[in-house]
Image (cartoon, rainbow, N blue to C red; front, side, top):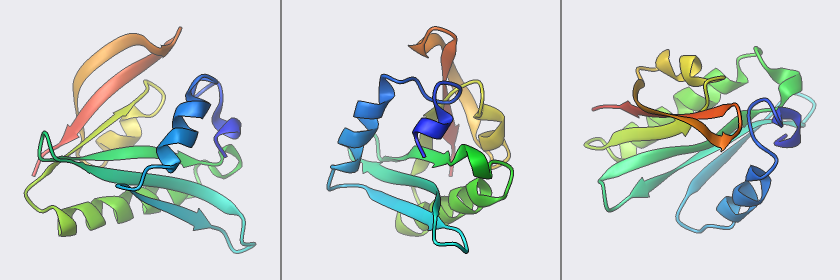
Length: 131
């Protein structure tokens, strides 16, 4: 799934970061399957004790299933879980110029833009959804 979104949504160098992330024990990570039992989307979140916030992390949809509603369902589910578990915490995320508008639909606001952060031509958009 990661590879289907590279290099447009992720840089090749991020694949190892993603693998390391999946080995963490203090995260929640969800996987969506379609009717054929194929993985079509995944994404997680983790509580940040230092900031009393929750980080929405590594959300992705297999490129073959973009615009099929899987990303929306996964994001809504993660936000619902976060607001239930951490009702007093803001939700943070970072994404690129290719997907920030998707997250704006859920009430996330841009707090910072860093040009060429992930790779040349792949900017970082820091965003927040406040309680």
